[in-house]
Length: 334
Ligand SMILES: [Zn+2]
Image: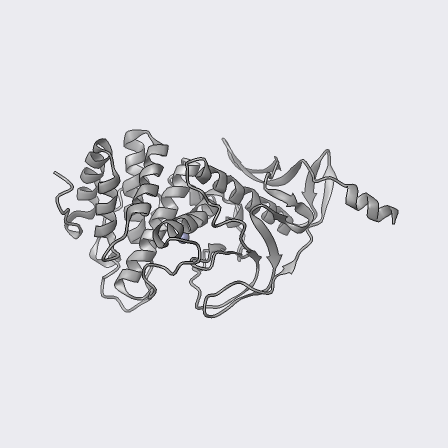
């Protein structure tokens, strides 16, 4: 009885040990996690992390996750998890909360998205598209996160990479704005069609721009993955081979074409030195984009339609260089 009382009276730790990105890169250090209300059970205003359960074959909701208990030792008010899972989950929860606040501070409500289920290590159907490199993923149209442990050693685990989590939240924001709600069907329901491929590339483009602007780092993923091809500061150009309608029957990789489009916005951010103005344009474009055809051209026209004259001039110049013959402006560019 006495022990039980003690447990009930114990207050939440002030700070938690987590991966934190500072000037010198990532380090494990103490930080508050504002959104965590019941840290023992990883529950708070973002949602609850549950273990296991099932992500069904035909989409739908995540079911069957079990309540977890993350044990910690308290050192001077800092919760030190007793295992590496705790460190990962604290880091993820902190990153997701930071990303949510960053978006909301830029006048985009996420009330419809949060709280949502956070599925730690569920059974995952192979029909849900996860690349081998993904171990945090947002379930578009079903509004939950899947968190998978790293399959290999990384300097900074993906769940702890704040740009990686900002990218995943970017999928939620893009879907909210283009489809109209977290549970709305995607604009294109067949991911294997050309329009479906364009949709997945533009999803990755939006998510990468959000993450790069939030971290102010066009190569935010490099702390976890050695993927120089994803660096948005490079001059990525469109080519026949990476075009979504390239005629290939094989599984489509959405990143190369998506990275071309993301790099346009990073270049805008660099040339205007205005990260918030660039993000506002990104949001307004996604809000306005109701294309007859889901493809890069309709997205580009929506971007130019929302841009102010200075932004438009820069975008036109960069788009002509990087999209070349693969894009014909319908008169928005001089
Ligand atoms: Zn993605």
